[in-house]
Length: 159
Image 1 (cartoon, rainbow, N blue to C red):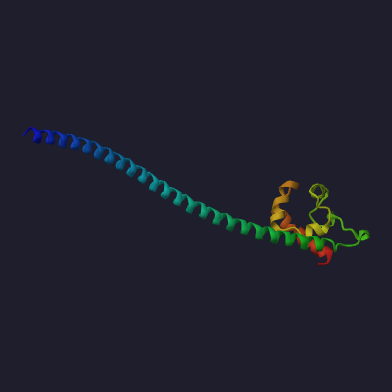
Image 2 (image 1 turned 60 degrees about the vertical axis):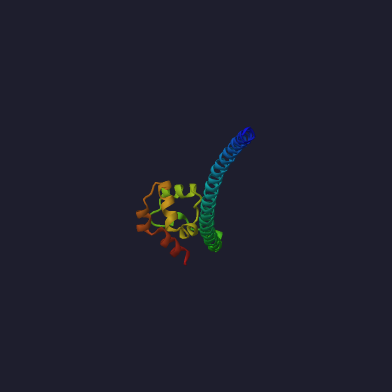
């Protein structure tokens, strides 16, 4: 009987040790599950951020391509304007800005201060450029358009 009691006590002690180890393993398992969930959440966030970055890069590339194309077109336009400007009358036949109806001494001074000194430069002005320079020379765009500065300049140049 005493031998059985000793075995029972030994078995209970082993069972208690096993129970303690089992609790440690369960605790470790729970901690690992928490870390796994955190890692999965981080992975989802990284994937989302990666998709967002790829989308932003694509938008940037599209915007860059569009602006580059617009700039190339503008450079081509300016090169053509420069080529046309080089075909202006001989120096002895230099036309005055004041030959254009509507350009008086004040507007002539304003235009010259902006670097617009020839009739051929007036002939090459776009509507956007007219809107940009009008307030700088204290003129109204509708007046410049009504007086048809660009058209008059082209006619004076014989274009």
